[in-house]
Image (cartoon, rainbow, N blue to C red; front, top):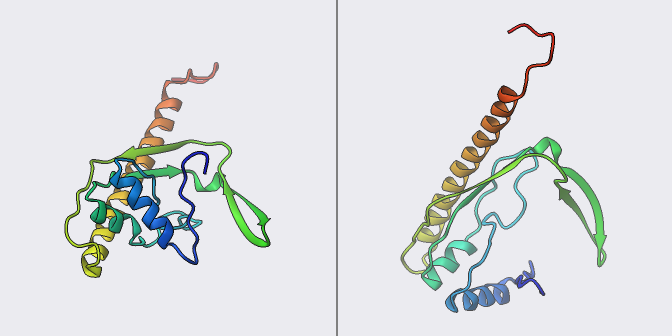
Amino acid sequence: RAAGHIEVDHENGRPAFEAALTHLRRGGTLGIFPEGSLSPRDGGLARARSGAVRLALSARVPVVPVGIYLDHERIRRVKTTISGMSETARWYPTGPYALTVGEPMVFSGPADDRALVGDCSEKLMRRIGQLARLSAWRIDRSLALDSWIMPRPAGLAN
């Protein structure tokens, strides 16, 4: 809360939605993971939830998609229990990662049109997927360039 986060109660998300909408209408910004949860353990993206697009449509603000890549082999899983609820946390202590920020996406129409919201959510996730693949390519290229410009160990032929 001290950092300005809006707490989401997974049993009742309406208060969080209203708080986020008020924040956006006052000119604030939000960081939202449209999947509503962590991505699948082996990589890729989960299906988008509708909240990010419904907020954008309701507040009439653009969505700036961001594609994130990190090495899934380096993710550490830690079981924890907080307030009687067990959870497996994921931790990425070291390793390369990249974020690629896309152009703002503007959606228009009524926020209660389920078909529209579904289509826009799928479009948003497709773009995030493209940007995540671009992030992965940037990491692969960076690692390849690092190995290319490193001095050749002594004794190896050219």
